Length: 450
Image (cartoon, rainbow, N blue to C red; front, side):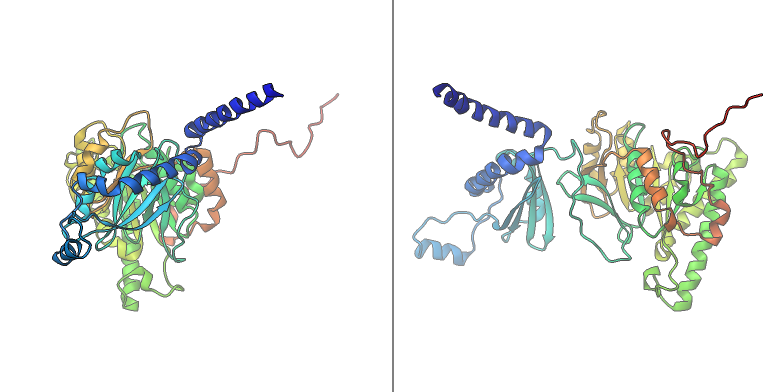
């Protein structure tokens, strides 16, 4: 009996330690909830004031507070750190809301985020301004981008919203493409960087919404041709792309006439009965539209670039949005490249081959993010840096989605594909769905006998 009790006394702790070690490696959310979060919460609680003091995030108290402390409380006057308003634990980290005292701004806290990360032993600390005077420290206890798992709880917007969750941020929140806030976007990345995976997740998300998808894939449609069941139009050569963009410009002008008839300035102000369906134009490789191997192709290129610039400048009001992808996008592509890039507000840059390409994508909106792009390792495809015109940026990673899964989603929601008369000549032919390999024939073959 004593041997059994000895085995239990030794075996149960060892099994528990082994289980925690397995959870830390294979189920980091479970390990964080059981061990990491309580330990970090205690460390944060007991070292908060001292950490803020050594990180330079304290200020002198007001004259009234100093007077009360010195004469009423009979204590020494000490610097004041930001006031903790709320601490909330999540499956990936901690959320701490801080009220900043007079003399501190969110940039001061953001500049000390790396020191706070080391002080509290977490994987990362992101600072987000929620409202004037209040910031939120979003701590992550482990590398959430190692194995991407999108949040289950998502805020539901209005029925006419165009919000698509595409990737996971490094703070554990979802990175979404909101076309009504950021109508046009540019995605850059070298080969095998995860750019196609990002576009695949975007198409799969858009396929579930009541929008029209327009594909421009000048690589003979090898990337977007498989999604033909959900595309309202597809161009697979530069000449077809020029004609398709011309049809989109005509559609834009028709929609502007509709806005003028109803005396409104935006598509979403129209009555729902007469409101045209929104269109998202997906350009797979933008360089193919700029390149011209002969002088006779320069006219086609100039016409194509002009049409894209017109769409980027004015089409947002009529519900036409651009998603431009490429490996490189700079002035070396030709006339009009920088003008078009300036209209693409959203930026997502994957791993690139040189620093200049990263500067093309993020240098004009978030210069601090350029160095983060150049440190993306080649063995982590899908990791990218997303920025916008506000100067904010974050690391993201798209979840793995196979082409077969994306095609299945497009076929499932093929009934949402709108038929637009102006784009009817460019409607791609849909191949029939292949039969499963293990399906039995409807009729059994009968051998032929003499």
